[in-house]
Image (cartoon, rainbow, N blue to C red):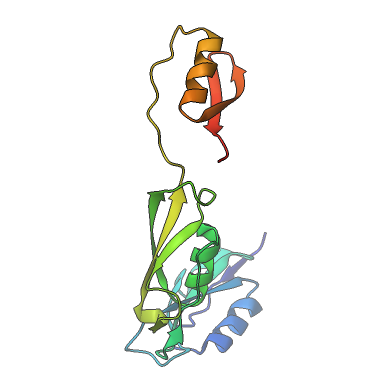
Length: 177
């Protein structure tokens, strides 16, 4: 694969920077960031830096000064954590996440967000905290050396049903209510 020099696009508009990067057989990736030193739409920094020699086809990430206009925050609940994080970062938000045991939604589903949906926010100045579901933990008795019928009976009593027995491991899940 051929090598090419990364153009220095700091200070250029997003559109001009992308054109210059693509003209050098590189791939442009854009991330919006807050900036008081650059106008909206200007490249504030890049990675890798201009002047470096890299293989053609490499990605150059440009960080573009985001708009300071308020927008209404969408509702990201019921999306997967990955989907919500991708959408929010594309819009210029910073994203934090936290897990919460919750079996009401499939694992890794966003179940809460802060700020709340429809809040008026400035993306480049806002961190959105996504709370996502993880399976609830339960404590079971030690079933070592128990007869299989006794194990099945115990699991039924605590609201679990057996899926399959593999060697010494029994895969289980909560019974449907």
